[in-house]
Amino acid sequence: MKRAGIIGLGSYTPEKVLANSDLEKMVETSDEWIKTRTGISYRRIAGEDTATSDIAVKASLKALEKAAMDPEELDLIIGATVTPDMMFPSTACVVQRKIGAFRAAAFDLSAGCTGFIYALTIATQFIKNGTYRNILIFGAETLSKIVDWQDRNTCVLFGDGAGAAVVSEVEQGGILESLLGADGRGTDLLFMPAGGSREPASIETVRERKHYIKMNGNEVFKFAVKIMEVATRQVVESANLTTDDVDFIIPHQANMRIIDAAIKRLNIPKEKVMVNLDRYGNMSAASIPVALDEAVREKRIKKGDKVVVVGFGAGLTWGANLIEW
Ligand code: ACO
Image (cartoon, rainbow, N blue to C red; front, side):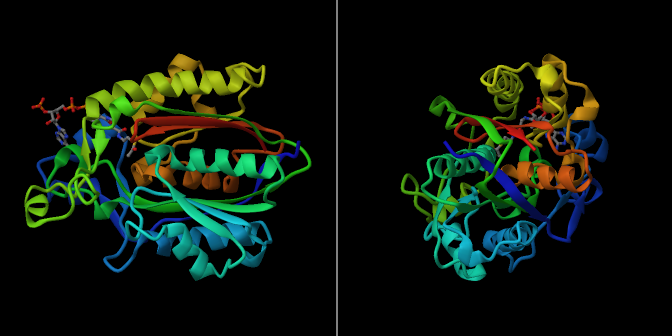
């Protein structure tokens, strides 16, 4: 069996910064409430003319450069997003066209904030069984386009960004273990009601603000704390290791209180935990690859380290990978 590993990472976040103080002028909220309840201070917002594929391309080209790979060498592109450019075709196909990766197959997957972990896990299988040699995966979101800027329960949480990775065969280390999960009983906890076949777009759906994110924050919060602990333990134990063996962990960046509660249950010290949600908010499928890219560039991850990436999201879904760097 072959080994799969990440050989190049890239990320991109739009320049425009939206601070908590800006949100104070839009909805009834305060910098203090947002910081203490979520840990978020700023988020990035894509321009009106910018679509998800535009920022996915920027992250992808950086990842390809880091991997010293030509787009024509790619066999497959997997896009993870809940904010595709259009319902169809896939944003992965749009990215393929823009970067000129014309040998590659391409598709999107929908797993909410767990999207990047789903994409990494699928890519790993294709490499391990020898089907493909080089795969580009990206997690990219322009959530600002589907956030209800009149709803203080959600608009303070999300931001825009993109992260990408090139996954290829490696000699040692790489993706050691992967775990994916889903519980469709939670489909109504985090969703966008209209615009699909259930409720196609109409004047009513627009008037009723059904093209925006709806979320039961408390329920998602409780689920998240539990599943972050369970998924981390399971992925580590499947490699016959314990959480003491983890050198660094990249949790999904949704809420500081979720991260704090999960790492306390896992007994992982704070210096081993990547946090950047104060600057970006929750970027859904982009959160983990952006954080991973930053951690590598800041040299917080060293060669040989055992790294866990773990997340949860709409679906409900969850997942984790154990990577030897
Ligand atoms: N500013 C001020 N007050 C607010 C705001 C705000 N932005 N938002 C909510 N409130 C109010 C509520 O209206 C409520 O007021 P009330 O008591 O008068 O009714 C009060 O604050 C408390 O509300 P709660 O919802 O109980 O606040 P909580 O402490 O649970 O925090 C939060 C809410 C931040 C949404 C939290 O539940 C959370 O982070 N949940 C997880 C969300 C998440 O991770 N989502 C992403 C999933 S991943 C994906 O796939 C996209």
